[in-house]
Length: 264
Image 1 (cartoon, rainbow, N blue to C red):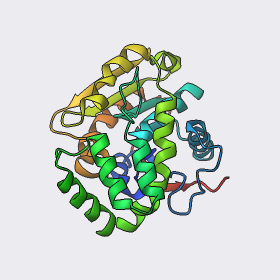
Image 2: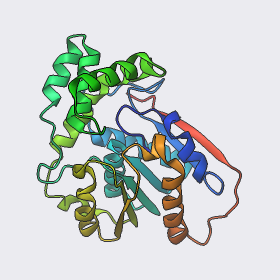
Image 3: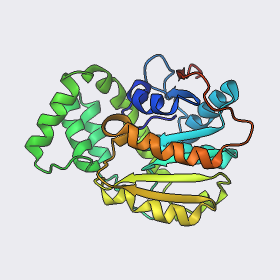
């Protein structure tokens, strides 16, 4: 399980436990979070892919789920090796400019200038992840995000955003590279999410040879980590049932583990 931007492994506990009744679930604590290592000067999506593959080799995992930026990572894991199942919820893929990152320079300048609340408000407005447009309201929400419960770890993760969004922009293409994914894939999105996140799903599903997609009613971008983990887990379980190999045993003891990345 690969978390998204500004997300920690623990944010996916509900989703992980919804899957762990019959499977062992490993949630990667991505770089720049907790005790995992820093992104590093040569950071890129392939850095994250290397980390995920290392965890898979150590644990024997054969299925990958990714959310948002973690969904982009998951797709690139699928390009590197075949999987029993690949699930991405609103992967941060830009196809022919679909992801607008025109706000990134302002965000980076505000963050580097010591104005995290302004930077977070810029992020919220630029990504359009909330149903609010008024700048004053976005500022208030940004302040609460950074100074309320969990605010410190959110502030600590913010410096990882420029490099991650930069990778989304760098990898913008016609999407044809994803035709190289040989795994059974499920692409999910939420009805309440911005169109740039859900609009790429049918395009990707048409490119990836063994892919299907679904836009789930009533769900938004934070369904996997906050608002509807059980609904997302149900969708993943359905794919797993179809993708399982005969030797996989059902009813194994529940286990959820976090994988921390220590390599430079």
